[in-house]
Image 1: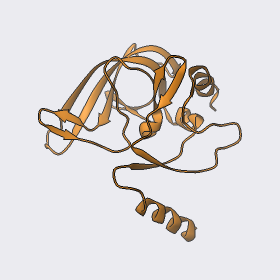
Image 2 (image 1 turned 90 degrees about the horizontal axis):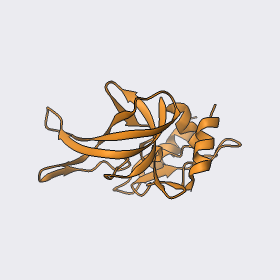
Image 3 (image 1 turned 90 degrees about the vertical axis):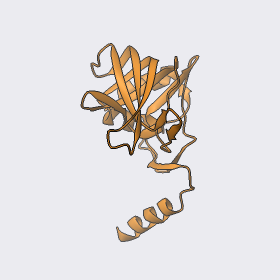
Image 4 (image 1 turned 45 degrees about the vertical axis):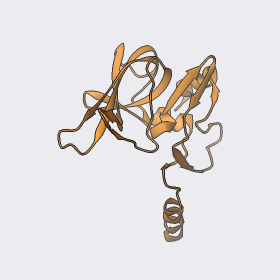
Length: 169
């Protein structure tokens, strides 16, 4: 056990600057961890500084077009770390990023009055035509063997993503 822990710490220490680090997740892992999985459209984004002035969060309003898991309301607010307020910005490597008008599939966890993306950037897929693609550029994933029948979060057809989410146990 100590050797495994030492190896994991060595991998984390070797992570390149400018990249968040997470264990590679399967779609099924993300679905099991999420309180809701929705397909929707980004309606609005607003970044705010925390009262202590140390952090910036972006609040993303999503119109929910379909719920693949859970019973979320027709509109949800997703809080993500980082953003820009005036001349100041804060970037959190590995965090999911959203664009106005973007169609997405998001794995969500409840956080009080708002939702958070489960699994960092692995839990947010941009929908482009019939394809769903997570933006993993700012996330270094530590590889692991996927359980039989499960698929690591990555580009795939929207149809396959929905099937995997709905079938996750």
